[in-house]
Length: 364
Ligand SMILES: *Cc1c(COP(=O)(O)O)cnc(C)c1O
Image (cartoon, rainbow, N blue to C red; front, side):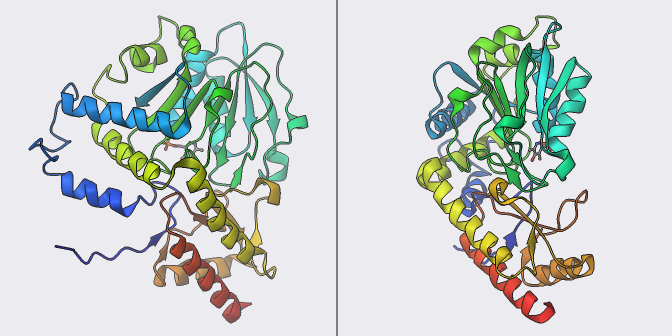
């Protein structure tokens, strides 16, 4: 029987909207996985049932991003924030410097954690422009002995996104893709390591996907605590300890859904169309003001201001009454933020555009 569950349009930055068919399947399977008679929450992580779930999630991720065979895919707990620590712990050796491209709050946090481990060089930053854009290629100045270069692919709070990867030569590029992973094609072979907390665009909170080139595993010192070592996790295929089984299961469902949508090139076209609608509404009259510079505009997090903070408060409140939830900007920057991840329906973007036009008509 169909249930009449009402869903509203969820613009939250994360945890964020999930595809409805994924939630429905998780609900159907929660008490008993088909043919298993037990919930995914109840089976051993060493069982064939879970091994299959893990293997399929990995295979689908590999298919989606055409991951070359010399890369390992890991599923780790601790969020993207733990990667701020694990990356330098594993990849930064005493004799070298870690280069960071500082494009926002998350990038700055990554720097703070790396400084606790070793030598850090800020190879470019747009802080002087309040992070309203990402650096141009000619602004990136790498250290001669760089152990790696760390970037944040999409700046969730500022609504900016790298359109092209920075040129780092042969230095391993490490990318935090937490808020735009699988929103568009990604060339894994240009990276040394990619990490992405799942709860924005890949699934539920509790698991972080790490894609790491296998030669870099040799940098993990044997003296590292096991739980903080990429080498240990890779050797144990993400099963050194009990992995976040439910989060991995759900991520697997989202990857299946994404393949059903036609993969990364297809979802990128939808994402471009959704974002273009919203940005053209923002640019239409000047009542709304986009905060990101145009060539850095994110397809995932669309940030804008209204003429006053009072109007912004009124906007958020009115939007909530119109079933448009989660539009308040991050507390550190204010304003409005519409997060429109893969699973966010295009009708929701249309609904927001209509609401914006009507709000401007009444208050402009
Ligand atoms: C949300 C976010 C993080 C932090 O993720 P956690 O899983 O909460 O640790 C890090 N980087 C970016 C780009 C994010 O959007």
